Length: 352
Image 1: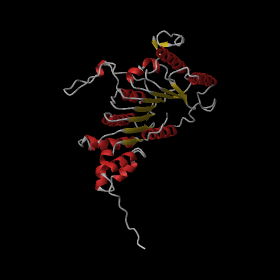
Image 2: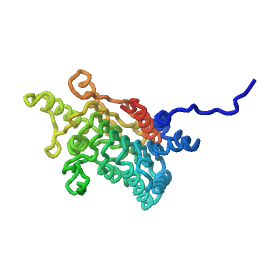
Image 3: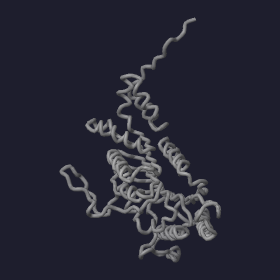
Image 4: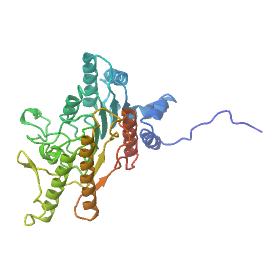
């Protein structure tokens, strides 16, 4: 009885192998693909352009190493440095502030390299000393083809381009953005997490101008955010009134304004997902008092009212109220966001 001493791969066309290997990048964030690079010269030639399609960075050391790798291939053809999907999760570190600034600089060099081709991005950053500036800088980066963005940390509100941020004209420029243009003109899904009470998000941030194609918005980690819930109610009223026409004013009677600006949802919004954050029991954590619990209960009652109004078919935006987060542990939160990111790349619903 003869035995098979070795196995050979069927002579599949290069186009078919490319398609198979491309699908593998989304299964495990590119780990399988990087192994395939070492199988044979043919496999290497097929996989090399796909090497950076899907990148995961979860440590400061990982950021530095990937930054150095991009530096080494800075002169390589553009198609060998194309990044399509990027997941970055950096927890609070014990390094000196100057070292943290160096990591942030490297991080944004990576993001700028990826920006022209990036389609999905998840960024979690838990260092409260720098988080506002990091997310603020991210919102000022141009992503021409980004369709899905998830951030988790203490974020500022996004805003459109100001006159001094307009790019300089070049001979090859077919289109020049104007003041008020979007940094992310193709973004369809936005998930904001980590700000316990983002009151003003729907009034001050001009979401319509920032993300003109936005269809899905999620806000998670809400705590004691009764004022933000009232803002949501007002924005839903205004959104419904816009759909019904200028003659119907019955839906805007309760609208609230901050600085004279009405709360407003993006005009093309189809789905709004809201999720309360983890709330410890009174006495189990310093700062959690009866007063805090009452504020949170008021927020939860308001969220239920929003959900019930949507179930009765009152609005034109689908509102989903997710179960309260069961932990505030950063590792668990990051794990869930990573799973959602992989799911979305494979065509699943993910967080949505």
